[in-house]
Image (cartoon, rainbow, N blue to C red; front, side):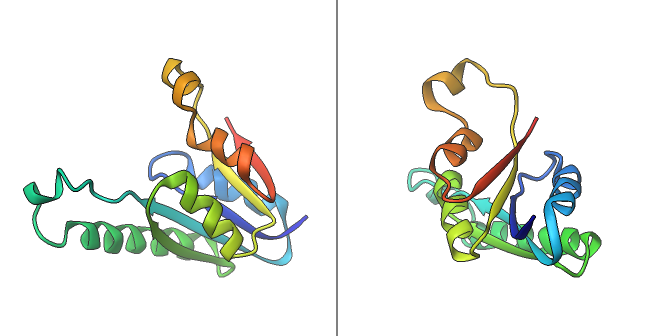
Length: 134
């Protein structure tokens, strides 16, 4: 089983199920890291938003993740990164020495065949095991 499991969380997308799956894969004494990636606000949009919007989004996401981690158990921690989800998930997996990433995926649509989903990028580029939930 795995000592450190990273769970990328897109709120409202089966995060409780992901934690349950990770629990089954976690070794005794292991840890689960819940991660939410807040995308940067494009420069062409930022003048139309209130000052501090990105910081507020990060603060809100961290508060929600900490609540989720508290409910999930003492072996869960929460972290928020800012950037492109695919890149940040891989970077956080390296940073936390994750041995496995548990990620939810949707049924691929036409746009995914041209651009690819975040889960597909993680599967292709992760340096650790990836468990994809459907």
